[in-house]
Image (cartoon, rainbow, N blue to C red; front, side, top):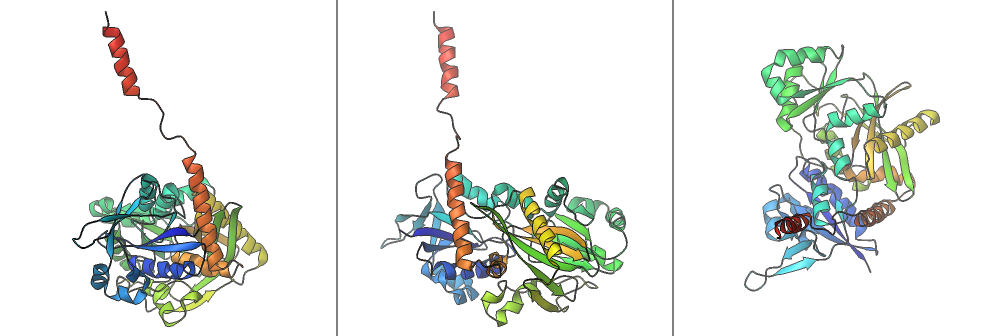
Length: 411
């Protein structure tokens, strides 16, 4: 019997549209796999959980208000055999229907989906789910906490510092002096919790730094400033954990003219071609500060597999597995590196990469359907282990206390 996969996408996140595209790529593949049946679950920008056949039509998402009217709401039933429930309507508008789900595939990028919050919901309602768990998801969403984990694992990384909104408001000049201490040269300024290059600025001119920090703090309460490695090559490697252990994909070289890829460059480029050739497409990015690199800086392309010496490739793949392990990731993640000559720096982990980095796995000999199957099978196996654990004791401590009180008061 086919297993029902609840594919969750959308969400209250700046990467809402990117999530929709990733989910549709995955759902199209799952629909061709006899072992699985897809239940699309769309989380709106206001946080409503919806389902309906219309969610399979990507074109409908161009008009979200009309789309939502064609869907039915879903509610949660914690720890019930069927933890999702459909408000089925009916002649008089009432009625509810329990939905059978075997495993969830969360494909929500960014906050409220990739940061451990949604994974916590799955834990609370008792629904198996693919991908990283609560700890790894939260850890890798917070760039500063992630970098501390890298430090503990003795992984090479560039110098960095964090700036909170409170410290920036209290002493802008003092925080700018801290950035000066990172050394000469350009820096990257990023929101601590976010992705898809939203709110990220490559600062090459000192006078643009304050505006870049303002932009990052518009998207998060904290910003991270990283020393930029001039003329570095960006290398990506995906890692998969399944029942057989850790596996590293071939490497991807990302070549850009502007020092980094903006939101538009990452996603709009794919709208003119086949979605099977790279990451999913998306919508327009936030405006970059004046004096900073913007979407006008073009991209010369992705190279898969990257043309690197075999020994350097093996070293990066080994570091990717080490970073994945250091943050206790699961399922599929993508680890991003900066490479200059023989120097390799671990940059960050994306626990839910766009398109699940399937193009890296296809180039590694693992088709998208096999990648999804390995993720889902691993999720069910992991849940079986979790269910074998003891969470509650068959003992009522308060009843024991009451009994002792009664014994003491007896004549």
